Amino acid sequence: MTVLRIGVVGAGANTRGRHIPGFQEIEGVEVVAVANRTRESAQKVADEFGISGVFEDWRELVRSDDVDAVCVGTWPYRHCSITLESLKAGKHILTEARMAMNLAEARQMLAASQQSDRVSMIVPAPMYLETEAALLAMVAAGYFGDFLEIHVDALSGDYDPEAPLHWRQRRDLSGNNIMAMGIYNETVRRYAGHEKAISAHATSFATQRMDSESNQRLPADVPESLGILAEMESGATAVYHISSVARMGESGIEMHGTRGAFKLDDNGAWIAGEGDSAYRKLEVPLEEQGGWRVEAEFVDAIRDGTTVTHTSFDDGVKYMEFTEAVNVSLAEGRRVELPLG
Image (cartoon, rainbow, N blue to C red; front, side, top):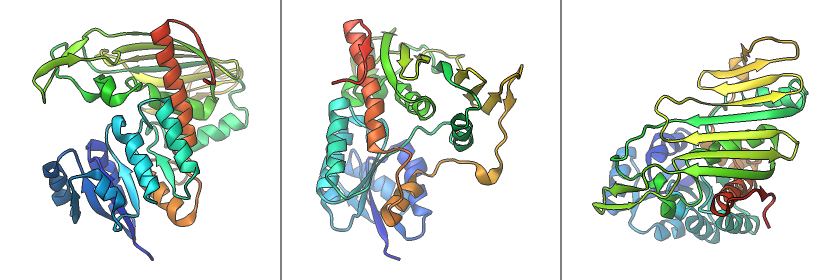
């Protein structure tokens, strides 16, 4: 078996907690190089995981003949540039979500992937994967009928105006991505398809925060509370409420159809069929459950040519289009029709 050599650019919490260990568990796969924000932090990661190659400049890693595929774990502001350089260098690419800063960058990435014979993949929304295949089969079989109402709550965090500035609160680092909007939209569209139009409203309660690196107060210009009303192509109505200041808030998805309904929360999936008066938990046999297999899917696509399902660049562009429409609605105070031109 030919060894597949992975280079990591950006070794944040998800990369250290999931991607590097995930690749190292796969036979015939080696993580051979890492580049981080500083050489010192890259060396620390290399020492922790036994990685031999440390690069100060991510471009040198991407162009290295010792690297076959690149895993991007940076914040969104680097996703496009690293992806384009990796594909140009003939490397397979797995990039952390969200796909890009904006729709224009996402389209650039998709176009570059289509012109390449390399595998291109985005880290997917991680929630509710265990029961997804079973639920999708029930949707396809008409168990819930046609969807009428979709409700998404992603309420978390706490209101602390003195908390330091986080990169997710900076538009220059996270782009048009607002809190958990993208991962919930990606999840919803797996079951319910695409949006026809959206309207959005957002609020920020602490518009400046102390940046720990510069020791200056900087704009916190990503909203802390977001509401989205979406008309689906199917005719269903979808309502999103997303907040990072809801200390006692809960998160989940509900989908109500003409025959039944299901909901997804921290305790699993719950279903109600035609004639049911209450939800019951969806029990999926262990051998039929899904789960996190991002690193394995990436490797399988490279080695065996299997189709990327979670998540392709094409699907990434679709949720980035939703993200773009939300930001247009916020900026211009109007309903936005989809698809965008």
